[in-house]
Length: 172
Image (cartoon, rainbow, N blue to C red; front, side, top):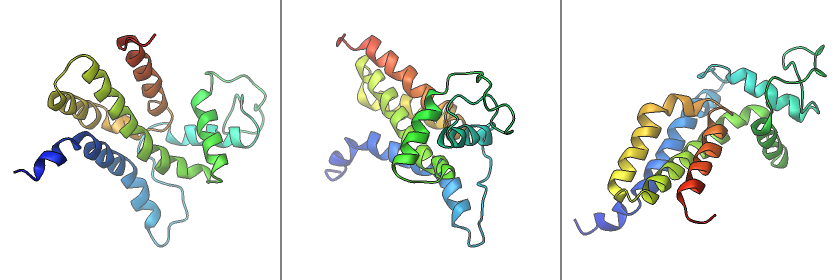
């Protein structure tokens, strides 16, 4: 059992990596099909809406009021588009097509959410095995299907958890 001791310290990292792989997995498997030409399967509601918002930002309409029609692009949007702008800029920086945001951000953001929840629990003096268990329960059990959905809640959870982390840390 001595060989498991170093592995035990890395359980949160392994759980987060597995979470990212499983969240991005359905999109990767669908895209690997030999005859695949798109679009990726819609696993979460409003997935295509968020993809069209990201594409609008990339097309030069960062404050578009209508993502599906060309007519009302100049109308003001219903919500402020912070997450769509961030995702569009990241995709543009790496010259990736818009549909890859489903894979890229589903792989990166749920593990980040797991680590933020784990860190908050550790700040609350929760023992590390319990912090790992509770963060796993939150990310795997309660919110797993929601974490596949692009933009909201993927980005929203991160900002919320960062605010909670700042509240509980003594680094004001």
